[in-house]
Amino acid sequence: MSIESSSAFTAHSIPSRRLALKTLASLTAVGGVVGLAGLGLAGCSRSDDKSTSSASTAAGPAVVSKTGDKVAFKYPDNPSFDLIYLADQLGYFEGTNTRPDYVGKIAAPQIIPLVGTGEIDFGARMVPLVISAIASGADLKVVAAGGKTLQEAPHMKYFVRKDSGIRTPKDLEGKTIGFNSFGACAEFVTKKYLRQHGVDVNKINFVVIPDEQAEQTLATGNTDLAIIHAPFSGRADNAASLVRLWSDYDLDGGLGGMAPYSAHGQFMRQHPEAVRDVVTALAKAGNWVNANPEEARKLVSRRINMELKNVDRFAYIDDLVVTEPPIQYYVDILQSEGKIPAGKVTVKDIYTNEFNPFATKT
Image (tube, helix red, strand yellow):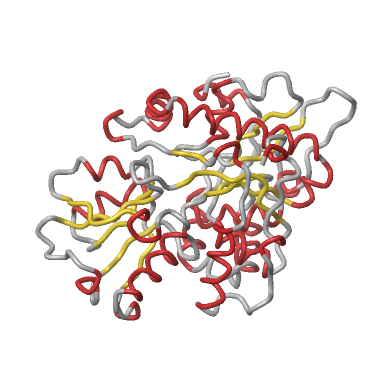
């Protein structure tokens, strides 16, 4: 099945404005995951088609009426480099009873809160968001490791204008940094690095800018530094007016670059075989991308309608088996930042490899 044919799935509507805002407001305390910026994006990312299924239906679990019926898992349909879309394109759901049900575009700050309440069944967002959500009582868990940072394939890159005069961490005091959401890698990896270099992060203005808009926002002077994730970071690399300062590999050697896939707890309990199907498909797709990075870039280029030369590549953890150091890294950061109390969660509260058939090899 091609990525372009994803519309063949029956799309649920994104939850109604009232339910979405209520859900997001209830999770605002989740380590800064969803603040006013996230609420502002909520109305922009929902479907306005009132003829589609109700919010209560969208929030409920997939139902299997008889053996052999397909289990549909709700997943965002975002323009990004994502293994669910690639697994679908590569046919890795064929031969299983599990299929993605794309529910429309969902803004990045909403994804983990909506996985935590079951409005969507799976989501791919960074580890600190998941830790903060679980610490606040959300029902979800990491089920598959995702992207990894390599020197030649960073998770995120840092750009400034060539004429900005910004070249060192201290130069950023008094400036504006744009990143895709609070509470995730871009905030915590960056603040940790800046503090290590004597920067007062309270003198920096941090604003939320979606990755696909970050390069233009920087070029027009609305931000002074842009932190941009692949695949959109490639366009900034090719922009004549911009220069790359660092990547996250330069900042922490890639330890903070794991971008895992999480699942809603109720879906995991009711459909363990479907979760296994999804994790298996994700692992196969991740391994395929690692073996075929240029072919993967071509598929993503078509999906997001961006010129191939501007599409940055991704690398993935082998077999998507979750390891503990990247999670402990963010538990420590969240505790030091005062986002979660010490001892509130442990690493083993955050993830499971029980659905990954490749985990027994490690």
